[in-house]
Image (cartoon, rainbow, N blue to C red; front, top):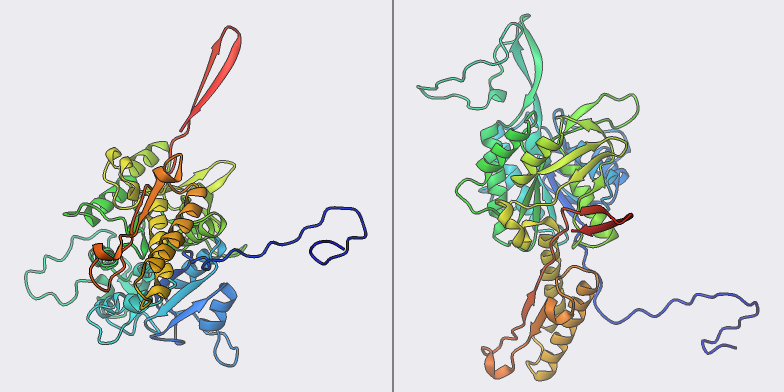
Length: 455
């Protein structure tokens, strides 16, 4: 009989699971949220789905199991598919409308962002879901079918609009149907609307800057210099923001063999990779150097020259490597300004998300202590719990320094040094930035080949 009350009759190696150490459950930071137009079901609701099948059940089936078609022009389905195909495990969907063409585009845009709403809707409803830490609005790239003259040139000068402008968005200018017109698919929101919406999203997330990060992309059809120009326009008049990251170029996707190849925004796939890396390693690991599943090509050709131009400006690039496939090849936030930004840890997505995870966990640790007697024992307990948590973060390699003392500190001032009724905990951390450049030096001396590597 062993000391554990078990009998071992056959010689061998036995594994006995250890009891779980006391502590709080791991806080998930891999959960994403999308805002879009999902069809007639769950309009105005926030619904959580855990895989593609549950999404289809929730939004693409009626109560009797019959198929419900996706709204014409909506891109939400593709973003959801890409999220789960690239490692996502849980996703919140906020459905703002049944169809794209039943609401004025400007009104629809306000609904998606939750602007001037009496009750929370769109983005505001999504941000009320405490689980969500990754945010995207795929429907900013929605398309709509319009009528255009067959013989009309592709690039016409814009309307000078000296008088009252009836419609600023070409999607609203359908014109009379005739035999000389054809249907064309065009973007529902023009560049001006898209730029305003992305700026609004950044400003909204900055109100609670540690809680979320947004995934953005330039409009389709842009080369590397166009993506750089878009980033500059997005941040014009600001010093940047760590709450968002910009990805380029768009993907060419094929959902099944034989299906048509379509141009698709990368936001869904990138959100999936965020979740994949978070689950496998943790939020402190950079969501980069990972293959993109479901993509068969890139909408724009990206070589070393284009990569250098875009990435040096803080645009995260997707690359197509021969023999490897399409990979996510960047992890910089919109806080990145120039090469001098490497000293700012929050210029990198993984450092930004690691800080978010620490802030969220600190909230979870401190919540049970609210209304407890403000004594030295309570302060010692808080100090121990936070120190234990940060030691785990340090052991995972998320912080700088050779020792825990170099990586972080936790201070809980005594009762006389804090305002009455308050328990204050001061935390300092040194976040580690990713090794973006691995340099090998290979030389020959006296017939011996030596190799040295530097990050």
